[in-house]
Length: 141
Length: 60
View 1 (cartoon, chains in turn cyan, brown):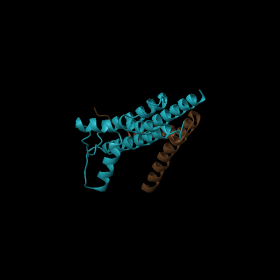
View 2: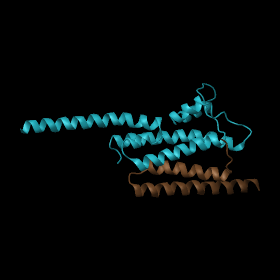
View 3: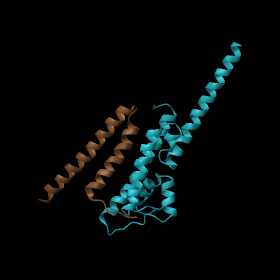
View 4: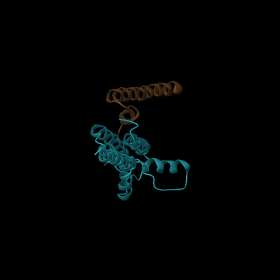
């Protein structure tokens, strides 16, 4: 009987570890694809919602200010870094590219702010995805 | 859809969003998150005022 209990306890522990390790991979990827989703799937509803709002507002405010969405490029270093920042927004980036949003407008001063908004939205989303990973591995509550 | 934000409003929206993410991700407990988010927001906005006055002084 004791052996059965031990086996069950070990099995539960193994299952828990497997769940944690898979969540440690799934949460940051989900959080990257859709801002806040990494927290939602770990039942951090309010945090996820706030993160989602922050990234969405920054991304769409950037588009509204006619900011530029960088495509993949191997040209100027700042353009490459812009692409790296932009792609941090996950699906938002791919949707913007598919819909041909974010052509940029060099005639408007705030369009440059918009470009920075979009890049920073991606970078903030990467920070949020890393946070989701930390929650999954138990480094954070 | 396009809209026009003033420089100051753009800086405030940026500060609010960045502070929200910093607060949530850099602290463990809700109370600390709120406090750190407010601290970051104050620094962002304070930085805007300091930079603005510095630029004004450089110009004059």
